[in-house]
Length: 265
Length: 198
Image (tube, rainbow over all chains, first blue to last red; front, side, top):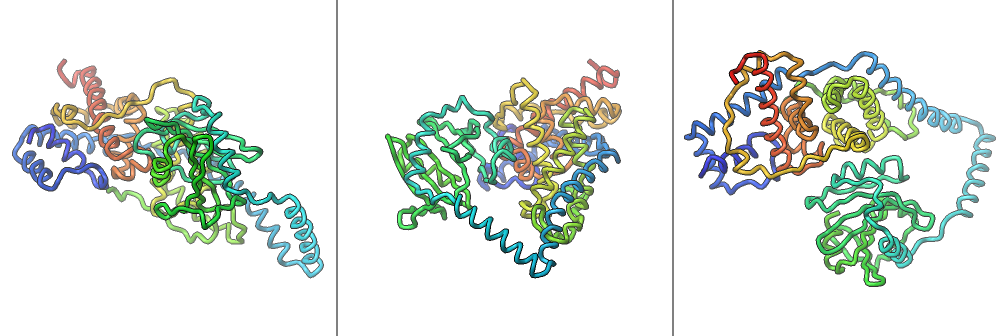
């Protein structure tokens, strides 16, 4: 085994928590260890790396947060707590009131409930949604991305505070993520995330799925996810729900390929 | 793994956003204050020593963390989680204001590792604190992040991968390339001060 190869094996292992890195076979790892044990230049290589690490641990500038920052941070959190606390106290106040207030509360709830029932949207069927998503996919260009990045954390963070639901964007190992933007699906707010695979463009729509009904008898089980598959105009869509959030993957890729992609989410 | 500081685990009986009378319990603030110095020191390096920007960044991160605290599954991992929020907040800000192309990751190859550096920490120990700071700040931010989290904060590859959203192989590669660049810059300072021959 040559120096470069032995160093590569050991560099990936020289720190804890490296599980998941493509490790050599046990025999190769043993060869790498044996090589370094008998190779002064390799020993010097690792001594230099460790020396620099020790140097930084000792000499890196660990400047303390100024007291004014500590105060600013605690004040801003206190302000946020105050906002939440006011809401809390309002509920306590209502709980402790007499029957009169309870009746008033009931009345308010009744009115609110009536308004809610009146405004409640009819359940959305997956066929309708599939058509809307496919239409949007056909007319959306990744060049219109408002956040362009292949880093899933960056893209997910960009949506923080911009959409009324929280969702999880998994990491992609193949750099296929392009970016994303907000979109309006006939009055319904959604996050739209773009991926580019070698053969096809893929759109991931994420939206509040509380009123979307996926019929159980038509769902396909995919790695613990229950998915609905639909198609239109030569495009395929896979829909699934997770904690009230609806995810819709759309592409002109074959349905089997799209299902395979959906399994990664 | 370094255990230089521990998470203070308060009795968290209320989550932000929940209507609960025990919202006064400052478990979150206790945990945050325990990590504030480390958060600030890392933020300072991310913004190349600009104190006002670092303070604004840390304040923003703390508020974001408070709003998302309910989503933190394992309070033991609050340090990694805070660093992750910090890196994301910085990337968002950085992407808005920077025209620099991002660093291209390369595999940790045998050719890359072929050159053997010499241990020079004795020599580097004669450098001034400001020179060490400047050498660190001159690294591309992607390398600076990994070097700081690995060598100063002593996070594992796996934790750094979580913070940066990079694959483990890229973390190892960035660490090595960051070390190589940093060594060159430290040598340059040593030469300028006559500690080392040209």
